[in-house]
Amino acid sequence: MKKLFFLAAVALMMATGCNNQNNKTTQVAAEPEPVVEQTSGIYDITVKDMDGSDVSLANYKGKVLLIVNVASKCGLTPQYEGLEAIYQKYKDQGLEILAFPCNQFLEQEPGTNEEIQSFCSLNYNVTFPLFDKIDVNGEAESPLYTYLKKQAPFKGYPEGTEEFAAQLDQIHQKTGTGFDQGDAIRWNFGKFLVSKDGKTILRFEPMVTPDMMEGAIQEFLKVNE
Image (cartoon, rainbow, N blue to C red; front, side):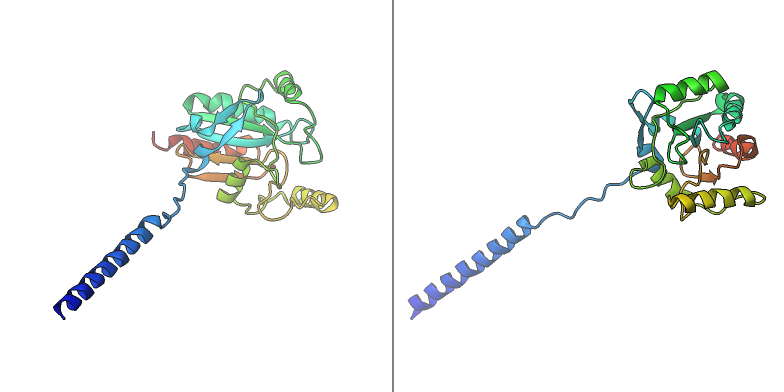
């Protein structure tokens, strides 16, 4: 009888040990929780220059950025002159202008990168950097503009520009672009002003000229000085 009791006890111990081992195996085999990648915003984005080389926007940390989509055959193209003037005035204080040609608005930027660069240099003496031609709206839009529009959505056209705004909306409705909807960039020479730390972004619609932005630029240049 003792022998039977002893054998039963041994069997129970072995069964318990097996269960514990199975539990351990289950714990080891469990998949780890997925790691969510953290981003630090605009400085994680890479764009291409006119030669097709990658440029990290992290290179511009500590600078106030004026980011603008440009075109050579637009009624607003003379804004290049104002952009260059404000660049010359504030570049030594930390302003950088990043210009991105875009052909999405009535195909007003049809040229090659070389042609665009030559046009800007010959006609407006542009010295701020021009980047590779991009889309600013739609499925193929640049990740930079996806980010900018999310951070600084469309809040309406400036007061006093109703006639021009109506013309833009009519163009988009007639051509079916959908660029009159949501946070889409409305036209050439839309502008985003980015603070030195990349955390504050202001949006200015195309009819806002560079000189009209000067007060905001001055305020951003004072941050952390």
